[in-house]
Image 1 (cartoon, one colour):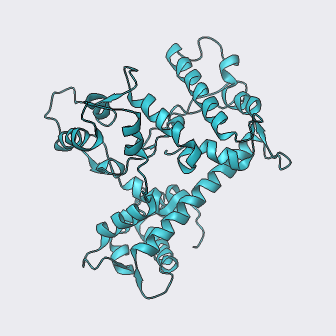
Image 2 (cartoon, rainbow, N blue to C red):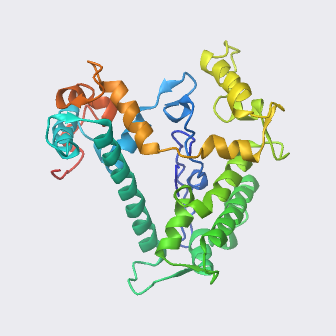
Image 3 (cartoon, helix red, strand yellow):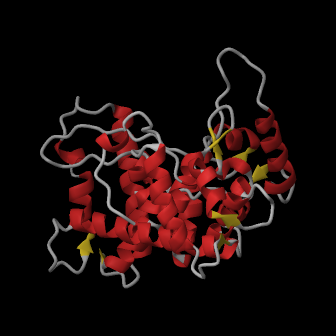
Length: 330
């Protein structure tokens, strides 16, 4: 499950584990549902060198099509991007404004969520269209049944404990998503379960999971060291701490820790990851325009977008091109 996964958590590493008895072991990283933070660089940057995280922009702009674009050559990417620009430029004046780009990103993200829910719903219900509600027992059996079936030596104790903790998290989130408390989720409730950051009544569980992920000593607060260790691990060679780490420590002290007690409490964490009146689509649109607006007129021509195609769509398969993928016209 995602978000993204926050997800924050920029660029999660997916570990695919084998299975017995036909039950799918869930990815541990799939259950990290923290949203990306919004008022610092860590939503757009990742990695020890604080390199710009183009993958974040691609997913925001393309939604579910991001993985498909990763398989295209630069020529194919530009060709498809050109057709997308025509659709984004709704008034056909030859410019893409921040508002038009915001609308496109908003639609892309909503489509991604709807498609993700549909895909996972079909998996959980075995594609049985007659199923209108998914029970907790069925979900638990299908997703975590392996914990009862696996031989003791199949998974390490640490992994087993991790999965059991994931089960506890899912049950807590399930109960919150289950609005009518019938111990089953319809598709709308299932969407809240999978993407709690999108539902107002689910925001508390997003804060809880963030705190649990970062609060290593379990004291209910996040210290500056815990905050930094969530983003950066010192190099064993003892190299100098990067400038961005120093800046993040300053941001923690000056901005995150509002009451200046040296920690982020639960309320401060909420304001950090779910600030009021924040529009993700608008912020991402403005960011993309800043990246590609060469003449600084606060809007983009098709030429500017195509010149910066790697910002919007990129390509990891520059040596393969069309050998890798059949793609449809936009």
